[in-house]
Amino acid sequence: MYIIKVKGVAKIPDYVQLRDEQFTLLAYFRVDRPEKHLEKVGLADKAEYIMNIVKDLPFGKILKLEI
Image (cartoon, rainbow, N blue to C red; front, side, top):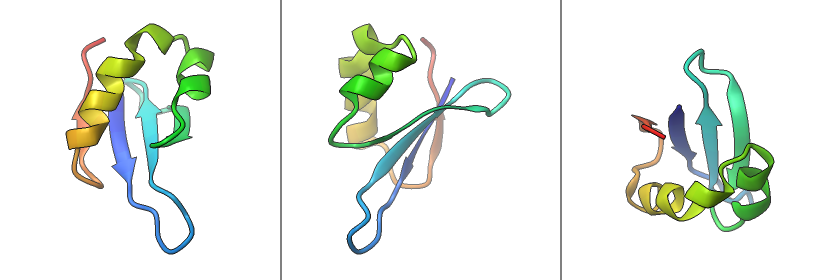
């Protein structure tokens, strides 16, 4: 699984993308509201781990997650 943090502009907030090994979009959510979207893809139990990574991840960088 891959994670990407996307920088928002003006009134558009920052977003996070979660993608699978074929780079298909699994989840797309605001940095400040991840709960519902992570639950939808079955990663609610990993939310704290994922959000700690997002906090330190630079915008535009793709990071491979080992979950």
